[in-house]
Image (cartoon, rainbow, N blue to C red; front, side, top):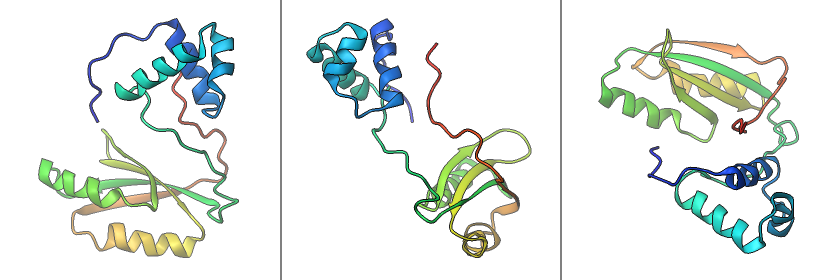
Length: 158
């Protein structure tokens, strides 16, 4: 995903982003009071950052255990063929709802996946579909997470 050209972020933008990353349901009036801007100015800046691609989504972080998916699995995937067309097909195949995150990476593996499932049986079924039945998967390695020590999508804004 490429980001369109945008004016550089100033201290107000960074302060607003810090608030939004912490809780994007905070009232614009409250953010304005915290960063010393009017509600309208905060709203304009947020809209500009959304249009320029700095803010890409407004989502809720949910407790996966409360939703019956307590198991997190990290998966390294190595492709048999890495021509651009083959990689594009793999990227599409890995972009299914069961895959929480997918990264195209350097190193021994070609992709790193984060998968959350309800049971190991469910993961076995998914692994068959994604990896065993895929002729372009050379190998994959599953790493079962014992404890999610820190989970965040926040970008450091120092």
